[in-house]
Amino acid sequence: MRIAVFGATGGTGRHLVDQALADGHQVVALARHPEKLGSSPGLTTVEGNVLDAARVAQAVDEADAVCCVLGNTPDNPKMIVSAGTANVITAMKAHDVRRLVVVSSIGIGDSQKQVPLAFRLVFNAVPSMRMAMADKEAQEKLVRESGLDWVIVRPGGLTDGPRTGKYTHGLDKKIIAGQIARANVAEFVLRQTTDDTYLHQAVAVT
Image 1 (tube, rainbow, N blue to C red):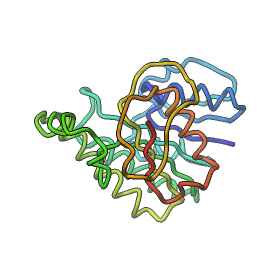
Image 2: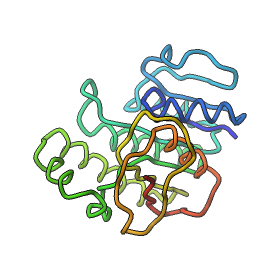
Image 3: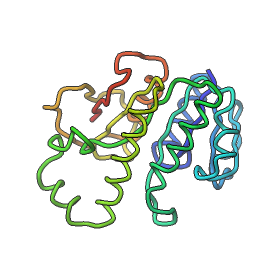
Image 4: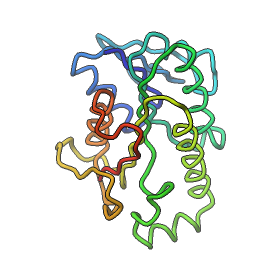
């Protein structure tokens, strides 16, 4: 399978790229700094920004699936996640690529009450966190309205722990956000490129 990855140099994105390559997939990664990914058999890097529609289209061309692991960082424009995702969706439609897996967060949309109250209060009190959540809200709306074969993955609090394969996932709104290793999130995201269990659903993983 040929998988296009956006957000490949982030914590979860790096694990996703490594795991996909280890499983024998071809990976095309768009990155502002491709040197961060190094050189590996099966890896193609496209230098550029997710806000550059032409570079996004180049990465998506001939992909079998797209994984969007974008995040807000201080050196990026506000709302880059939703704006970048809009470019990804446009490119997928232009190149007839159907499968889209997007990493969002527990606490977005109808999962707000799955986050402990103390964390919700923090989110509401910190302007940068409110902006990041609004960006993810806008991203999810774009994905739901895309007409593509999408899965939204909503992880809990991300850690740098080892990949264990042990985590909870599902649609039950009683699932409460806890910590989960980025490596485990990457494993779950990779599975969604071919698994239809959560097709057209937003699934919690924690």
